[in-house]
Length: 172
Ligand SMILES: Nc1ncnc2c1ncn2[C@@H]1O[C@H](COP(=O)(O)OP(=O)(O)O)[C@@H](O)[C@H]1O
Ligand SMILES: [Mg+2]
Image (cartoon, rainbow, N blue to C red; front, side):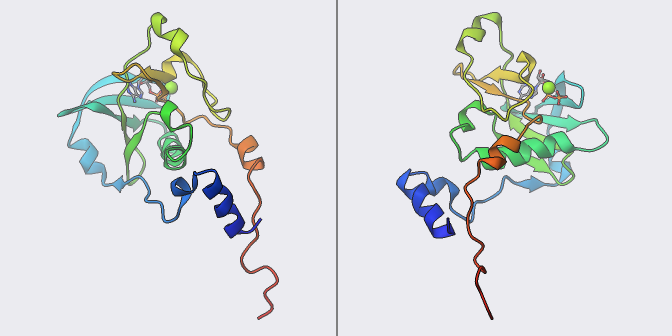
């Protein structure tokens, strides 16, 4: 499949707009912008501490305490791509990440209660750490994953449509 075939397939499926290039990436900003607005700690897991944000009740800041900021970068990369897909609605949106990746600003969700469990949406196959603490809900009641740093992309990478490199058969 050539790049043109690929784009016309997406066009037929009316998904092309989502995947057109260039696609602006989620902003990467100086650490200071996060430090300036970080407020109280509201949660924590094995790799991150999570803080409320001064002047905003719709986002949190996630600070990596592990040696490398892999988890924040993973969510950044996944959100950057998944926001244009059918799975965007079950992932907490990432607003921005810091230069090093130590700080990440994410849509704020509230913890789930036992009453919410019957509303759980299906999630993509690549999402790997499905414990309930890794999910939350919006003020409208939509349930989303808030920790998607554990992914298994092997199956989905394997399923990718092949396309032809533009220089195939070039003789000059
Ligand atoms: N977007 C969010 N909104 C509200 N609370 C959050 C959000 N992200 C994380 N938290 C809280 O902080 C905890 C730890 O965050 P998590 O992303 O799971 O970090 P870790 O990688 O350490 O497991 C979560 O279990 C949840 O209680
Ligand atoms: Mg977690």
